[in-house]
Length: 460
Image (cartoon, rainbow, N blue to C red; front, side):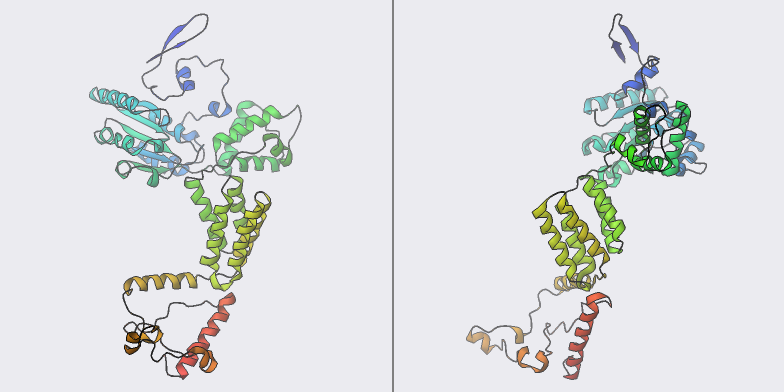
């Protein structure tokens, strides 16, 4: 593979074979020894050179980690690296190649088409014929479509390629089952606070100066990174550039200087489902503070507020139900208020509804009863209701006994006849069991009262 540099004198540069389709330009020039005077981002300069330097992935790279065990056994199979941005997936793949005798090849699913894939596979087969293995790293592998993913199967199956695919998306949803069955999934975790702090300390050591931040600002910076090591180092660079001689930033000044980092969130993908699940579970768990945090995160990331309004209505009927019937009224009112006010004023109505629904007594009794009724309807949906509750608009139906014996409840003592309305072959069933919380406690008393009247009249 060759490339040319322009200028007063043009030189042909031959890059090593291991740097092929999809490799970063910075890697190519570093391999050719031409990066000496080019400025490099801090995150690139601090890229670990040994697996032991990788921060925050001890479950994979610690003394007992999964990848450590593989290397110890000299048995690296095909792998899928799944984790958030900035957790070290690409770095670990490169360092693994150094621990093996394989030729390292890197491509990106964003820039690689079918023609390039065929060339990569042909080269890998040629190396295999010569007794040389290929470690193929595929960044953003989930961006390949299903047929492109299938094209990896033969070369993985026959050992021409040891595949390492990196993805930020859940492999269960985004990758073919056939490909997943041939690879082991390694889960990379977002970097925790100590791991980010370790990166910042290394950055300070390399730069020869400390970050000009007060303690609370340093903690805020770590929070802004959101578990992304690359983002933490990028923010650190911004701070060093922005600080005047002797200037120390407090938390408010830090936020003003770096503005804010856009949340890692994709409304069409897993981040969306993770956060709405977190919001729902906080409401169900009666924690309005945590619920407000996740609501704010979703709104801040650009989630459709009416989607959130619909979910809050669902929470009101599914998790509060009749323990507080007012929850549904409040949730619906919040939806209407947002429709009327729009953003940002209408967001307060959603926040108010979340607080109300999260604070309300909880009951899924109506939800459970409805599911039981649906199941019963599917199993016994062909049964005819008892004739006493069927109208008789024709003489034939009257002669067949339709409506005969029906007792009009308002004419009965206590306004309650106690008749059995279930199909005769099914008999009386009990589906709704109110809980002893909130308004459902009162509903339970009412049902007990009707049940007692029914028993007293021998109609149970």
